[in-house]
Image (cartoon, rainbow, N blue to C red):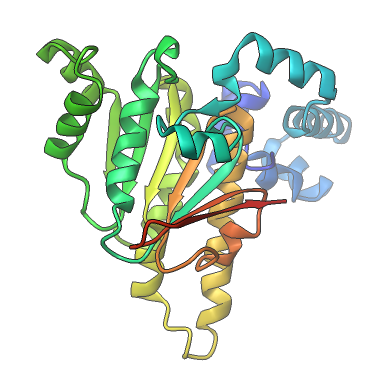
Length: 289
């Protein structure tokens, strides 16, 4: 949980503003500095800096919980465990749906409906809990300019005509989906880094990136020396941040890719789920551990 913002570590606003002038904005930035450097940037004594280190360390350390507590929480509030895909067969294979607090990768060759699936998941996340949704907002990062607002409304109206029976409900749903078009690896990573405060302020319950493979293919030719390392570093950093956000806020992170499961290995090798759609009727599901 090192990417956690210092403002959420209960440091004073004055201190956070002072640290931000040195580009120290996360717990990781703070904890990677030596005691001498921290004394310099904070303007505080050795003893006070040690107290700050303990405070920041406690703020970003994972909270202990027992298996029983997890079981009880999920039994009381099933929506905290999974987001249903509304497809009975797929939900059954996934043991309930797309897991909250985890990173899920959906992969397919071009033209198999991956973007349509992402749009459908956006609609589902905005639905009330009583209908299997998460009753929250969605952050949708579009790297291919493939998102269609018209298609979003069409899917919502056709899949749930009884619920979306008025323009007011459709408008409410569309206002809950925040679309960002990021066309480079740098802009995608920058956007992911900025999501923590948005998740809190906008009550976001689902993050979608469609698709990470698009920007990777455009910027990294793996045949060129050094590109493979840079590509792997970008994917690992992005996957780590998305996994942190999913775990910290108990929401699903949903990443679209192309070709086959594992085409973005930094994502598929982390704890999570791979869903692969093909042009045939068959699909494969890989549970990563």
